[in-house]
Length: 428
Ligand SMILES: [Cu+2]
Picture 1 (cartoon, rainbow, N blue to C red):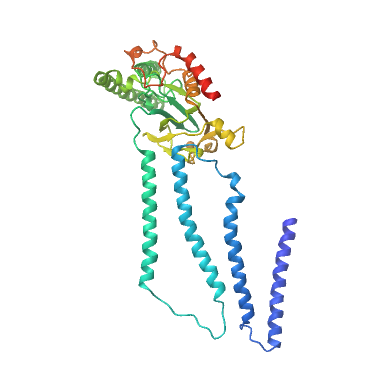
Picture 2: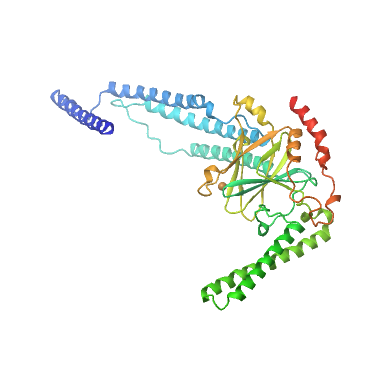
């Protein structure tokens, strides 16, 4: 009903304007004036109104960021985020100069040169020097912007210094899983064919590969026995289907045996540095913690489709692509607690979210990130269960794996002193 009323008011308003213009036309006819001749005074008024409009229009652009500053992101929480923000600021300044320059000129000249009887516009069709100036200057500015952006991009994606802490961020529809290196400080190899409920990231170790092969062989033997028993009663299409399934399992076994051979050769060549011996002590978790003021190399993988790992407070984003590992370098500078103070929001949490529309629950593909002092991080990390408990693994030398770089704990017995250290650090 309300909508109908509003519509009626609009239609009636339009009709009134039509009538009024007709009245104006008739009165000017009666006064002997030509309809298309507009008085100079009217033109001048329009010109002044143009100036007024320009001032209000540009003032609104300045007012807008102040009015909505409360919904802007807080200051960047990483070194890389500062670079990105600086780059944005540079772009805003460049755009601002062009935007305000052209708009001020536009409104000024339109308002100044309103129509006056007897004045004609100056015919000025071409000037090579001017053309050159407004082609060359933007070109130089654009080249500068691109070079600046490339330098920042190369710094963010540069290979990390040896010994940089690695953390894997694994995406699938529709959640995130994280993998932290164990006492060896390095992440082990992974293979999607080993993904099971117990091994969601497909970590390759002698045990996980052996277990997977054993399960597949068992499944195959069972399927073969079942087929032999029912061969005479099953319809042809079902038979074909089962044969197809069994052929698939056989191919899988063959490929995993190939991987096993590759693994053994690698272990023989690289000894305990083999990537296949590094996975047993990895820690897989659904929680995402990172230490503050520490160089971290994030490695991204995806199980199904392309996702995008987005950390808005760190101004960081990287696609996660099935079949390849993408990486990104981060150094976080503000802990979650400090950011709660900065934002005056006790409930504040950093967030990792998917920024690529990846399916029906994409909107909910997120995980909180806790950034904490190194001590607190170590305490949290040491509590995580390792992928394979030492002793359970068939790996040759899990006990003699080299101690990790300085700062990484090597045994569970070190947990107590570290816990004390962490408490001290936090109270500072
Ligand atoms: Cu996603």
